[in-house]
Image (cartoon, rainbow, N blue to C red):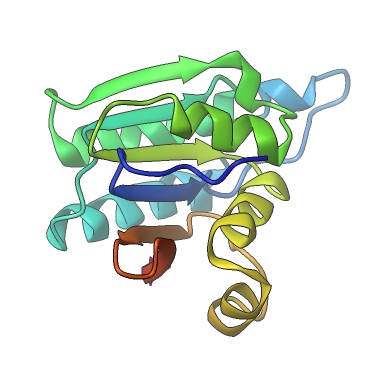
Length: 164
């Protein structure tokens, strides 16, 4: 797995907000956000917008809970935000997440995905020590990691982490 080099210069990793438990016979893919999740998605999207965190491109898993989280971000960031839904992000490997980001030309890319892969992708870019230090309890639902490329170190750095 290769580590992406700019562009993008900034990567946002957003774990989808809290999902409802599957109903009998319901596929995991089709689980919606629960009531708390809908509220958390709106809050984290507004917090990101208030801090000026705005991607040029939002790439989301097609799973229902990710789409709903992406909708909240889209509302907070404005209708001009380019949003793409990618089937390959559901049940993907870390390599797939990194490859999708690396293939983009945009300066700032937001990826909305699932755990444990989103946490593993963050760790792959910033290293185990930085990951454990920043997120000792793991990557929470509706958590937003902001990574910037440090040109002098030729490495990705976690510059902010927003939670509800």
